[in-house]
Length: 314
Length: 314
Image (tube, rainbow over all chains, first blue to last red; front, side, top):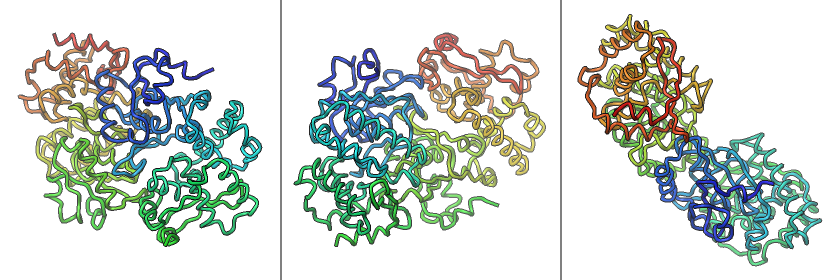
């Protein structure tokens, strides 16, 4: 079985403080990053380039990103751009990264406060998922991962995997976690392989993200929970044709996983607007494609005028 | 006929001071960069990202790199990484960029004094070559382009295109220039299409570059002329089995194009060493593949221990 133990004796391990605290004995001489989104900036990128230069890292060498989505996003960007591409592998250690961030070949850093605005599409040489790492996650971060996996199930259809196992999920039953990881990765890779560069089908994965990203930037709520908020809010605003049974099942599951004070958070919609305007997916005609749920297993992209979306808030 | 005139009324033109001085009336509101390699740095990259953010540039927008290889290298990197890739087109205005730098999908910036150490492989949406721009080039820069085109001919075989037209070439006969551009682009694209990521065949294009790059970094001589110096030096050091007629024709042509004080420049080989050690093409086993000329039309990669290469200088 592949897992974090493979990393013993590997050079060029990049990980976060909190992951290093738990697994330090598995890493020899890791490069330890801070925790959180804050690492995805240019100063860090330059520091790591300098470190790779100092260590004469070459095109045939491999660097390892071990941590949550912030680590894999950053190391994917470094691995793609240093010497026009060296080898890189991911060991995602959060459920969110295992089911989403580390899968599908998107990497990025942030700039001028805009998340993921600089990056590339490039697939790592390997993604090794060690589900045991999920057990030690903080509750909130674990729930983030469930939401992103559930999002995939809304698109693909198999939400019974979630609804029928909700208590096992909450207790972090390892078998259930593995089932959910396998399912989400398979569905996501299936979508990504048909549209690697985010031109059409892949945008379905943006479900809940148009409003969710804005909510995340504005309130500082964690990504996965913000997406859950976004899924609910998008249903309320755009879901006038949604199948009512689907709506009920989705909202109930979200209420079960996301703390009430987040899911029903009142935000100043007028202030939220400006974060929507910065969305990468708005095109030059000021149109934005938003995935709209018709029913579970049937999500379609609908094109909106971004001004119309914004005006919904006023 | 496509050419610089197409740029009239285009937004997001990035060009260099010297090109803007000549062609300003063809550009509306261009973003004007300094001249030379100095523009390929992170501060500039960040300034341009900020400019694109300010102007709400989106994935369906196109940015235009109009200038020599430094401009196309920089804009290729920006176009690839901003919002994980927007559209970008090149209008190379130097013979060197037309036959080499703007062709083949390599982009890059420099870091810690190491040329092209950060970059990606990514093909522009369009490369428009306007051969008239070559007429206004400085003599030295024009000759750089001839050398890179000649390098391609050594690999491919058709050097008579150069030898038979040497006087026309020197007089910048437009027909001859067009013939040489067409030939070089065709041969380069043929090689690149077989090996886009520089794993094997494409490395033949590195002919003269192992020593040439080191010479360029150390002496500050322009890229194309440094490559000419490198071709000659590599023949002297590694060419014990070269066909003698080929050697004579190559050296004579180089002597005809490159000023004597550059081609025969005495450099402190001991100091040159440290620039070779930083070569991107050295792999983790400290091997370096160097293209070795057997005869015109027959160049092969030979693997050397980088220590052996370095020891040749001492």
